[in-house]
Each structure stands twice: as structure tokens, then as C-alpha cells.
Length: 376
Ligand code: MG
Image 1 (tube, rainbow, N blue to C red):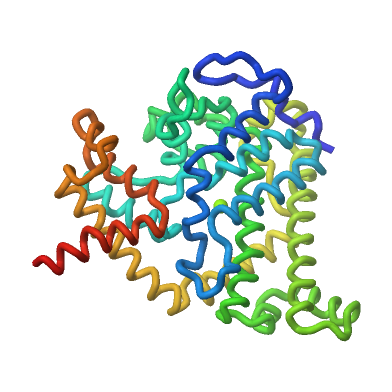
Image 2 (cartoon, rainbow, N blue to C red):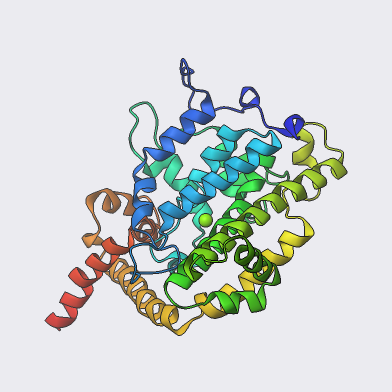
């Protein structure tokens, strides 16, 4: 399909610190393994995807979400003849920089950082993790990932302006990322739309009938399921329809990207970088479905009173902990305290909090803030 646009590992710009090639794993396979063996990757298990402290043990967390993104992105890459190793490494690290409590946690950290004329962005934080915070190798700091993986961490979901982010200049901000990196954002969108629908029905925030009302294609999937499995339970029919919808979205991403690539006239992976517009895209039908799902989930789930109430509490806890460490930097762990002499302390505090899992943050909050209130 698009083998001519696949980014070959042999063309990689390589690692920041030179290393001997491995005898049987290529550079992107090695990057994938380094990501999986990192502490930041394991911590994703205890970070919120959508449901914080869910009533059910079956809801996604950021680790299971990451695995789902990787599985979808690999399927798409395989069908399109793109570099599956690069796609897998990129998918596995796409959420590495997420702070505790999902996007709400990110917004609070950003708000606190703005008081100091700074900000928080999870892609930039992920880059800091793989470039420095992971300390596992004697020869270099961080994971020493290949250029295209680091570039993809930054550029998979948005563009950065080189005037505003001069420190990112080495990532060729005036060019698009590889087609492999472009796929990640849409594989992410498919994964969270389907998973959030599943988890929301499980949590009784949504029922399949209301999904049918707003997403006509889902209604069609439900009807087809009824014909094929007339005696199946409502629960099984819902899962059959959900799987059919997932298949439609993945196929739509494959077709849309294939069509856009054909139309663009790009004949090699370097042409992909020079184009005006990203090639990875849904076809018309799946773009409509994806939009309808987002609208429905935003209204009924992300802004539901149940999630809003939990969010108000965790927003306060993240902000209080940030302000506490700003006023008491001597309570930071030694490793972070050492950095406060050379770096701006709000950045050090932000790094410390962003790295926390939900449960670690709650334990810190109750250990420090709540105890100190009792003392007052
Ligand atoms: Mg994600």
C-alpha cells in the first residue's frame, strides 16, 4: 500500500549518544523495549485515563489505554506497509508524560505554572522523561531513544512554533513528522472513543440506546447484531456492535490515509515531511462517527456530574500539593532538592508532581496537607 512512504530504520538520524548496534534488534525495536522497561511506563498503570478511582476494576487506566493504542496503530501500520516497529515505539510512549488525574491534572499543573510565567505540556514532559529523568544506563542520561521516536513524542498530536519553543529546534519544527508518528494521534482517538463508550456504559453513565440516537452508524451496527445474534443478551449485542464500530473506525483511518497519500503525490518518506498537511486522516464516514462520539462523550461522560465532582476534588489536591512544595522546597525528595539550586523551583516541583501516580499523589496529599491542617 504505502511501503514507499514507510520510514526505514536505516535512515534514522540515530541516537543522541552513539551506541553499538544490537546484534538482532533494530534501533526502533530497542527503543520499544527501553520504553516498556522504564519506570514512567509502569507508572501509567496507576494514572487516570478517564475514570478516577472507578467503581469497577474493569475501567481503562493509562497503561491499558496505551496498549490499546499500540495494538490499533500496529494494525494500521501493518496494512499500510508502514514501519510497524517505529509505530509501536511511538504508541507506547505517546502518554508517558501525562501527570496524575488525566487532562484535569494537566490543566491544574499548567495553571499553577502560569503563575510563574511558565506552563505544563505533557508532550514536552514526556521528552524530559526520556531525555533525562529515567536513570538506567551508565553511558548516558535518559533512554537515549532514536531521533524519530523523540521527534514523534513532540509532534504526534500538535505542531510547535519554533519561535515559541527554540529549545525544540533540533526536531525540525518547520517539517511534518513521519507518517508513522502522524498515525498515533488518530489511533489514540479511536482507542479512547471506543474504550470510553465501553467504560461509560459499564459505569451506567450512558446506555446503548442513547448512543444509537446520536450515532446512527452505531444504531446500524446494533441492528445488524440483532439479525446475526437474535438470542444474544443486550450486553453481548452491545459488545458486538462496539467491535463493529471499532472496525469501521480503523478501516476508515486506513482508507482515509491511503487516499490522502495517493492524492498527495508523495513518493518517499522525505516528501511526507515537506507536505503542507498531515496525511494521516479518517475517511469521511469515520470522521463523522468520530466527531459524533466525541460530542456525546464530552457531554454525557467527561462533563457528567459524577466525573466533575471527582475532578473538583483532585484539582484541589494537585493545586494544594504544588503550592505546598513551592513554599516548602526542603520537603522535596533529595534528588529534586539538588536540582532546585540550578533550576527554577516551580519547574522542579512541577516535574515531581507530574511524575506521581494518582495513588502516590493522594498519599502525599493526605500525609502532608491534611496532617498539617489537623496541626493548625
Ligand atoms: Mg492517549
